[in-house]
Image (cartoon, rainbow, N blue to C red; front, side, top):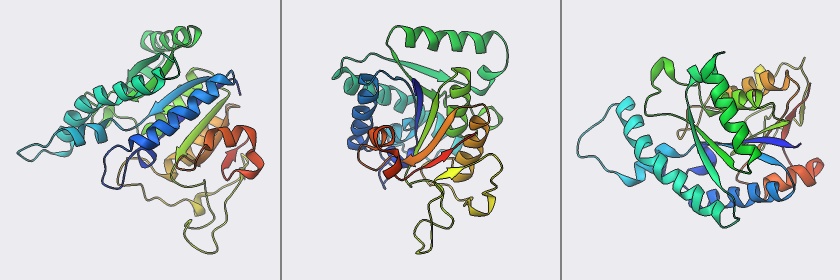
Length: 254
């Protein structure tokens, strides 16, 4: 896996109170730095902007859901990228922010400009940090979630692998907390796991396992290796690369 897209979801980066878990974020940065040291190119698709903004500002009047998303993401995006900048700087890694919208993935000039921007970043050793432009992307303009975004990035940049980090080990045959639940390690193109996918999504984000499943199937169909794994496990990224057989995860193969 030379070029890897790592997507880190809200349920990995956020604490139970909805605020950003800086310790977990730092651990993810350490692991991505390790990937780079092993010679891998990495593109990071990250959630967390709204959580950052929510912890910074307390409004004195009620806001609707769109207003909250726009306000908190506008404030939080600054803090989020600042944190990534400081954490990666410890490893002498330069980061660059890419804020994108769904329309940027339509064929045409915007798509080509975005692709060229990220290509020149990688060629010059800069780590792209990608997120949706939540300040202007509302209602029909939004991605389904960052799972969809990461899949589009993986295909656009012809990645070798997409790793979706969530707060469970992968896809199970039942709810993970059930005693009879079994982790599904490999998913083949003809496997239909719809009966095993819980439609519930976390309170911290818009996605859920349905979204990850749909993204993983679509991306794997184009020959890109896709892994769903638990981003709260210590050193999950090195473990997946060095000792995958003994590391819980779900992999989609084509």
